[in-house]
Image (cartoon, rainbow, N blue to C red; front, side, top):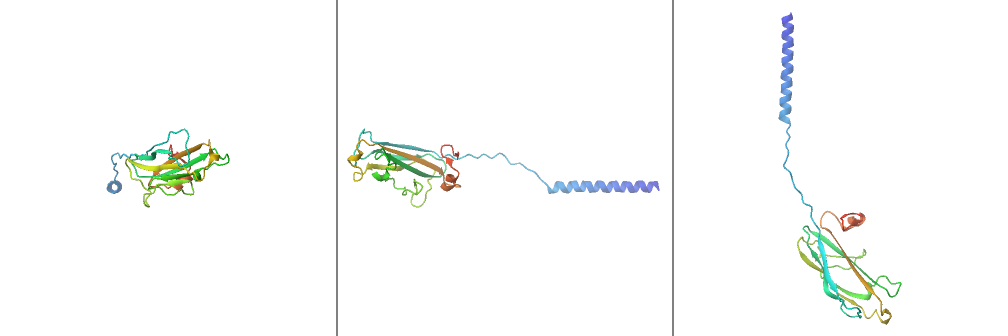
Length: 192
């Protein structure tokens, strides 16, 4: 009887061993792990530079051209981008006046739309606002004159101050509205 018990135990141990080996072999057949090599991603760069010059006369008169060299933005970005410019023009006369854009005539480059309700002029070559990556000069302001039909002798000695501020963003994956909602600082690219 002892021999039979030993044989039964031996058979049970062998069966458990076979089941264990089979389970190990099946799990080895059904699983696999692998690792890819390293992948490198480069972040794009939006880069524009202003150029242009105003006349150097100390005193100017209505009708005189105030732009000596057209104001341009040179695109040196390595990704497609979109561009907008805000024009601020103020005068010291009359003292209550802050927005003097109605007192001048401006001639913008050919691919700029009209001033939008948010105060910006958007670049839009035909109907496409995307500016391809690569170096190219985009004329923004080619002419600026004080309108003599609106500015008379009362403005003698008045100072006009022109400020051009541009903002550029990547063309894809974000809209101007989203950037405005997030209050993005365009110098850092991060929320203000």
